[in-house]
Image (cartoon, rainbow, N blue to C red; front, side, top):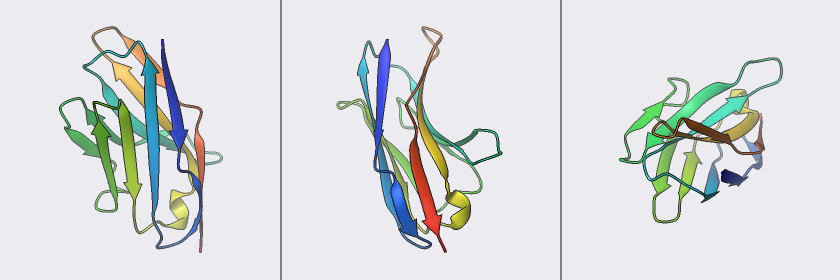
Length: 117
């Protein structure tokens, strides 16, 4: 069992920045993929960015160049630095951890990000 606790959500003006954190605890497999998803009202949840335990990254085209995902393996924590925020970034952001070796998949509770114009 893995628990994911997110923090750093809030309300900011367009053009501003936020940094999200997600701390994992519990029975964590060393080899895993952590990612940030987001879901806006009336829309399906989408992958924003992901990072492997070897720090290989993926970004959705909509956030590429603005967001940076990183992780601290010693702290079992993943971060999402969000710069140049746009109103269309408004969503609930969810932390996710996948461990293919154990076929596990865990989700955080979600944190609200609201960007005003």
